[in-house]
Every structure is written in structure tokens, then in C-alpha cells.
Image (cartoon, rainbow, N blue to C red):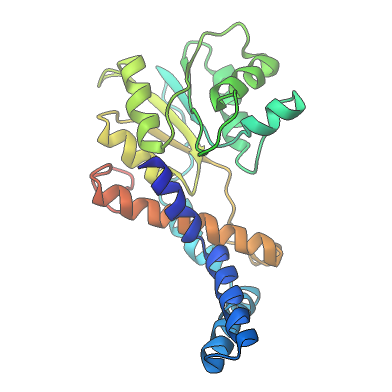
Length: 264
């Protein structure tokens, strides 16, 4: 199921669909068959990319996700624990180069460390095995351990869950390790666009956590919205599509109680 899910994810990315449309259109055009269809298939990617340059389509898809849960401005007086979701590190690149490698979701890691240092009484947890079909020897948890130890958490006990492959498994596997109680206060740190699906997964696991979204890609500012280049916009479209499709699939599989989880 995991492999099938990854294959489905790959072929439903807008950037991949645009590439496939261009390739099929070029093949038909070179073969001399279905010329009108070939021209249409070639025109779709051009028209879409033109719209993406002229209109903030990526932001329109990301903003409802990122604005769903507000930032955690005021922390509760007592924090039982802090959770960091995987997805911000590259185990294979870390293994190849020998240094912890982060991707564009790095704020998950830095925000987690900041919260951990501000709350020395809190229990700490990281959850992440690998979200890739072909994996190396290191898990995301292995990379996280190296990084957190280097950023000042070496003396703190941290629970590292290293087997989960999906957000739903993040919640279920970590809950099985920590056995959280209903009266405890746990803070969940993940990217803002990923927070609705993550909160839905933790609620489905019977774990009512507090959302602390980080790593915003959008802002209600014209200057910020005009800054991304076309490749960056395509990447943001892919990210938004991944989350919206993920929310739909999670709802169909009862891995969340609603299509778009929000604040209680």
C-alpha cells in the first residue's frame, strides 16, 4: 500500500502531469497523428505556466491550509511534551555527506529546539522513519538525533520513533510509545500547510495535541506573493496538491474525522 501510495503521489503531481502532457503531445506531433490533440496537449502546460506567472494560484491553494491553525502565540503555563514531525531532513544525503541535511521544512527542527530550550520540564519526541520507497541505512530519526544533539539537546532525553512512514503512522506509533493521557498538554510542531492533516491524524489516534504551525510559504503581502520564481511556484503547487489530496484520502480512509480539520 505504501509503494502504491507513493506511485499515485508521483503521477498526481501537477508538475509531473504537465511534463507528461508535453511529452505525449510531442510524441503525437512527431508521429503525425492526432495533430489537434497533440497541439492541445502541448498548449496545456504553456497556458498553465503562464497563468501561474500572472496569478498566485499556488498561494490560493496554500493559504487555506496555512491559515487553518493560528500560530501558538501564548504557550500554556505547563507543557507536558513537545512533538516534532519528520519530513524536514534528508537521510540519504546525510548518509552520503556525513552531515545532517535539511530541506525547505527546516523550521520544524529549529522551532522544536527553541521550544525545548524554553521548556526544560517538557518531554521531547521526534517521529519519522522514512517517507521514501528506496531508503538508505539512516532513518529521519537518526538524522534528527545528530542535529538535536548538536543544537544543545544532547543532555535531554528525547523519544525517537523511527519506523513510521506516513503522518497517520507518526501519530499512531508515537502514541504507542508515549501513552499520552487526556489531561496532558502536548504541542505538535510541523509545517503550516501540513498542520491540518497532522492534527486530523493525531485526533484520530485519540491524542488531542496543540498545533504550533511553522515554516509558512505564504503571506498576506503582495511583495511576498510576487517573489517566488516559476520553478518555486510549481514546487508550491505540488506541495498544495499533495496536502489537499492527502486530506481527501485520509478522510476516505477514516484517518481523520473531517475533510479539513480545524481548531476545536
